[in-house]
Amino acid sequence: MSNMLVQRPTTRASAPKPQSILIVGCGIAGPVLASLLLRFPGPASSLPHITILERNPSLTSSGQNIDIRGIGKQIIGLLDLEDEIKRSTTGEEGVRFVDENNCCWAEFAVDKSGKVETGTSDVEILRGRLAEILLDKTKRDSKDVQDRGGKGVEFIFEDSLMSLRQDEKKAHVQLADGGERSFDLVVGADGLHSRTRKLAFRNEAEGCLKKLHMFAAFFSMPKEDEDGEWRSWFHAPGGISIMLRPSGTKEKSTVLVLLADKTGIIADQLAGSERSVSAQKKLVMSKLNRIGWQEQRLTKAVETADDFYFDVTAQVNLTKWSHGRVVLLGDAGYCASPFSGMGTTLALAGAYHLAGSLVNNPSSHSQAFEAYEEAMHPLVANAQKLPPAMPHLIHPQSTWGVWVLRILVAAIYWSGVGTLLFKWKGPPASAVKLKEYGLLDEKGE
Ligand SMILES: Cc1cc2nc3c(=O)[nH]c(=O)nc-3n(C[C@H](O)[C@H](O)[C@H](O)COP(=O)(O)OP(=O)(O)OC[C@H]3O[C@@H](n4cnc5c(N)ncnc54)[C@H](O)[C@@H]3O)c2cc1C
Image 1 (cartoon, rainbow, N blue to C red):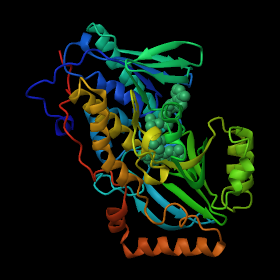
Image 2 (image 1 turned 180 degrees about the vertical axis):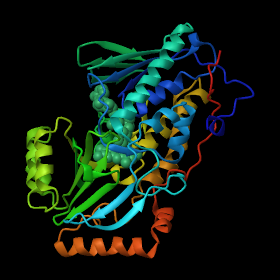
Image 3 (image 1 turned 45 degrees about the vertical axis):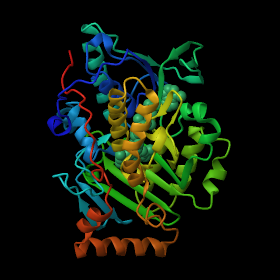
Image 4 (image 1 turned 60 degrees about the vertical axis):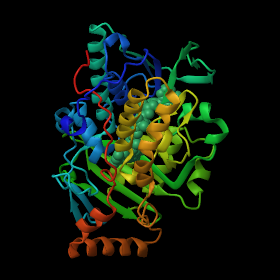
């Protein structure tokens, strides 16, 4: 796999002067960027000094089910993580549209060859598990560089960015614990609500969050025999849908509750208490009331969940992803929303292109950032183009609308046009080919 992506360069790019790079966020994009930056050609002592700052105390192996597609899988191959990730997948067999009696109206199986991007990818994994694998990989790469005389990666957990200012020479940051540090470059890989973006882009970032008027709640619950290995997708009137999915373990199933909020009532209800988990849980439990499918089980699971997560769904639309010495990566710069099925793939591709652009432009971060933006724009534009039905047409308000939706998906299933539809409008994970940068697939001593 890695040979497909990386050709050994015939001439090596000249190694840049070691740069100090702060990566804010140790989710998906952050650790991948660090690992790829440690592949700069040249001796270990010439590699960048990387610091990763993560606000959480540690990573948990749970989190929502996410998928890796197309070029995202190529990058995983480049990192030699294919086997480990395949061993950690959730094993989801496909998606079933079910009704109140758990009757299946239509089912769309995963394409295990990975050639057709159906709703279920052949690589489905819990976000936390993926983040854990990526962090372990970065730690191994860092140790390897340190053993060869380089600085490797410094990890700072349980701290976050408080302020950021730049001058001609450096970007200066202040951390929540009071520490002050200066770096050549700062990469904001801190997700949808990125503080790096707010601090560096200020007014330019205002209004960049395009809300999709849909909230998402995620949690897990003890698995029951009938849960099986398929994703069950249930729709209820009021713009509610629930996905019950395998977690890859015998112990638990995962749940995603999607709540349409076209009129802004949920946003109003939560106003002022957006960050209160108990207010969020209360709201979700009220929506589950009388849906007629697994109601008691789901309500109890919300009440007791210790991994409950709730957020607005949105896209990030910015015309530029860099500002001086600061650059945005992954959801922070170009979140495409969970409905794109492309968030993880964009985070991986972004890390690859940013690392490659820095290798190719060792003496100018501005040129490197321009090259990164140029390489990523077509992919992001493709990913952010949601199919016309996403997300509100598949979240009907009325009982009648739910019936029409079920009849429609059944018609797609029975007519056999599902594969054609996925080929036409499936996530565009291979629509843009990866550019070659000559990042080494082995240590560059
Ligand atoms: C419900 C749901 C379902 C999804 N399903 C899919 C899917 O099927 N397929 C798919 O491809 N994508 C999916 N996604 C999207 C995917 O999870 C993200 O696109 C992906 O995780 C983005 O990676 P990232 O590294 O950019 O950001 P994140 O994974 O969000 O990581 C950001 C990191 O930054 C840290 N951080 C935040 N602020 C600070 C701060 N101030 N200081 C320090 N650290 C900070 C956070 O703790 C986090 O660790 C889904 C998302 C959601 C919410």
